[in-house]
Image (spheres, one colour):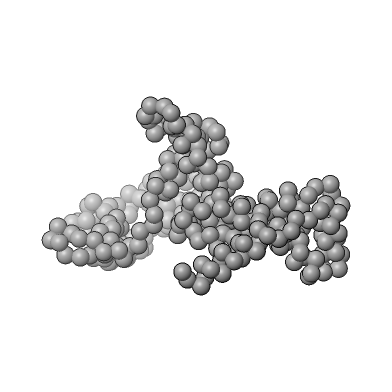
Length: 288
């Protein structure tokens, strides 16, 4: 048996043997820690509640994380509770600390259970920690129930969508897999899993070709624009060559003409460009 396992058991044994605190003694320790930051008082207050940390941590061991880590995170929550506890309120420290301990452990599980972050909202956290229990409860002692019905009932209980339930169920059903994990293709030769990922983006030669074509077309358009009058060129730039194209009304007000006149000038400029481009590049009719 390893040294860490022995020390872990000794720690748990010591924590379980720590004496309980009477209500007045607990309040006195909490006041001393709040008012004068008495470290000895804090130690006694938290040491007497480590059994609570261990009990809460044990409820989450089925997530496959080390029990020692869960207890450590629970202890962080216990210290947070001690820092925020108000001894003048009529509530026992264990009642107040339970929430902080559980929240600290759950946050640790959500951070470390998977490399994919999940449970960012309160509803998602509730789904993560209650899905298995609710699923077992709904299927206990009954005939096979279709997954979509189970998802609908769980969704109504927790307040999420059925799609969220299905996605979380899929996540909890399998563990993370490394993209560098070896696989075997049809030729029985080992390959990494990432070698089978499909990239839907364009190929490098397509990207280069499109960039070259784009520059060439821009050059053609620039040359053709030289045949337009200053007003025609301005209207075309404002209406067609800007992401937020100006409206006919706005251009009409700026130029002091009606919007219908702006439309006529725009159409005439487009036709002049088309004719000029076809004259210079008759084999590029598709572009025009």
